Image (cartoon, rainbow, N blue to C red):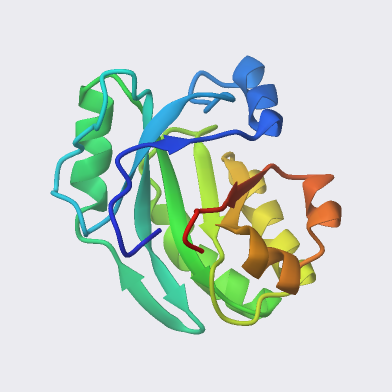
Length: 179
C-alpha cells in the first residue's frame, strides 16, 4: 500500500463501525477514503466525491530507522480544510516492546489528526509478534486515538495471532486480486 496510490479504500471492517458512536472522526463500514503518503501530492486529493476520509502516513519505522513523511502535515491540514475526516498510519516494522516504545515515543507526539481518530499500524514486513503488536496498539489507544492494525491478510496470519488481537482491536485486512 505504501508503494502505490490507491484511488479509494473501502473499509469493510464491521468492528470499526462500533467507534462511530463514540467519536465524530470514525470510519464506518462502507466508508470510502484515500491513502495518502509522500507518493502523492502535498495536499489531499480525493478520488471520488463520495470519499469521506483520508488515512495519511505519518512515517515509517524499520527496526530502529525512522522515515518521517514530509507531506504528512500539509495532507492532514488539506483533508480537514476540505471537511473530510483525517486519520493517521505508521508503517511499522518492529519485533519487540522496546522497538514499539521507540517508534511510538517518536511518532505519537507528531500525530496531527484529532483525538479519537484512527492511528493504524501498517504491519507488512519484518518479523512482528503478537505480544509487541498488542503492546503498541495499547499504547496508541492510551494516547487517546483509535488503534487499528492494518496489513495484508496472508502476511499477518503467518506472523500474528489475529484472533487474539481482534478481541481488543479492529483489524483492517487487505487482499488484492494480484497478491
